[in-house]
Length: 188
Image (cartoon, rainbow, N blue to C red; front, side):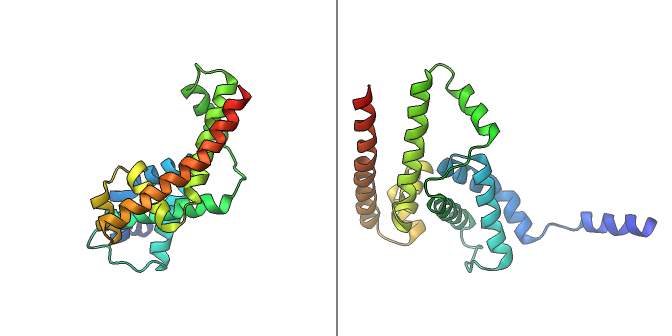
């Protein structure tokens, strides 16, 4: 019995490994990024697990010593966009998500709430459909708040390329979302 207790103490007293340190330092950032993109805490948890499991399994080959924040942000964005693309039109909603939505939008009528949910879903789907580079740049700029210069540095490209890609992405999203807004406006 005492031998087991000593073993347990030794295991828990060992300093955390590099991956555990990385997880402790950055899991909040990965979760927040994924949550903003997917709109779902459950999906954000899946993305968080995916990002770190890829590191554990060694599927990702990247030197994390240089800039772990940049790598993990990009990994969270890409895993989130992959999840959104893979989901297609089907979306599962957890009971906790529904209750939160009701609390946040308690002053709107049900029709307006439904339109808002549709618009948020449409935006997420449209961003997921942008393509890998455009989607990643769009999320870094408009979800994460990076400026074009920072995005260019993170993605190892020029500011001009970032500006052009973001302009095209905004134009495409405006067109897709505009169709929804026109349709919704005609109903009223």
